[in-house]
Image (cartoon, rainbow, N blue to C red; front, side):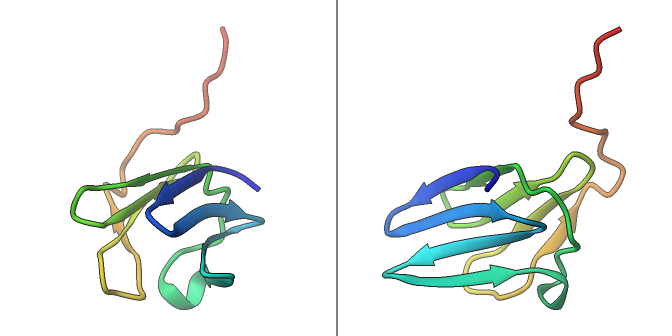
Length: 85
């Protein structure tokens, strides 16, 4: 399990190489079929409008409220991996 975020009754988390959400005992998973490539989704945030944002070390995606698919944001985003000199 990677990043975790709660939004009301929803619990979002990265699990394996996918993004998942648990609500009322039911787990839904987001992956390639929902336009989210396999990755280590270790950062998750929820915007005030209900959009779910998730980041892997090299990608940033957003799931708009009421949709089942994710969209890539800033495809040229820098890596989030910190490397000491």
